[in-house]
Amino acid sequence: MRRFAPSPTESVATGAAVITSYAAMVLAQKYQVPMEVAATGVGIVVSVGRRLVRWISDRMPEPKKK
Image (cartoon, rainbow, N blue to C red; front, top):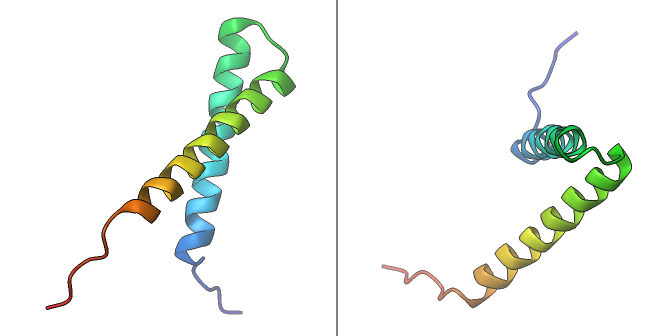
């Protein structure tokens, strides 16, 4: 049985999920809030960050072709 390497998108998604869940766990422990509250907060921050990146990339000039 052959095993195929995950696509770059899958790898990034998995890494992001691991990082966000870890961040939520750390926040929950540090500030003594329920895990669900910390996860929601991290989710909101990630969502806003994605929108900001998309907004910036939409406004960047197209690379000039040589």
